Length: 308
Image 1 (tube, one colour):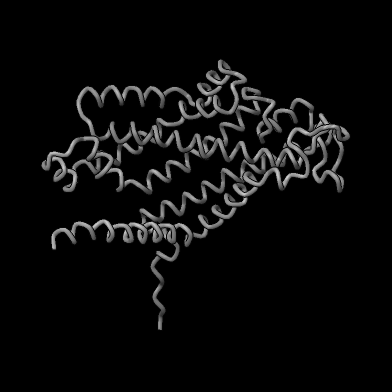
Image 2 (cartoon, one colour):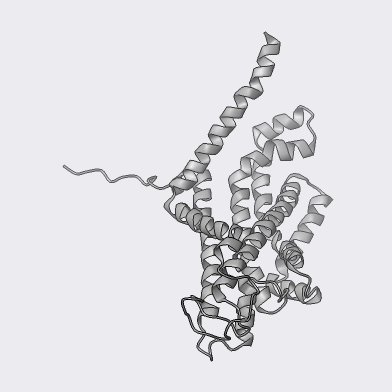
């Protein structure tokens, strides 16, 4: 009988975890703002994945009339180099989605590792970690990002992602550290300590599962910052100008004086795409917050009693 109970326990836990995950996803989807954000993000992800099929021309295909207005052949006109604007816009979604996902994940990973360790340990180790985190928080992020990117100029997307990760993890680490400190004194952590479990197991087995919504929210915030940072660095010419992205479209539009030649679409279209993609992640964050805070869920406000 004991053997049967041991074997069936994991089988019983798996469906319960799936039901809990499905319930959390349902809460996110039930939030109106988050639902709009998910739809917008899904559109950009589909465009990024199917860019070669959706774009009418190649990303760097030129030979078309230069600085031409919108026509049936070129719905958004052409650039000063004779490239199709719509095709570049579609292919540019790949870079922004990739940078947002990878840089957001790596920044969140570093923030989780440092934030949870900083919040659990005590003594001189915590002081050293705190000094490093506060140092990154005190230094302005954008100037530091520009300096590092300028030093490693033309290193490609990998360098931009590395720069964003190095400069973007500290704030998430501080937030996670505060939550870890509040959970460190709970009964289940104390029980794990008395049972002889190590610090690593306590942090990642006992404390980490209770911070899922906070970590997911931190990821969306880091991804939003990464998308904006990548576009800003490319616009300043600190990235790889040969890569087609929304930031490089803005960079070449500025160099060719697009506004003076009446090609405002070269600045408006990529800028709008950057804003919509960043807004979608921010909207999804509303649904993530509703998972951990029931008061933020749609329909959670008390209804007014009807008067007779």
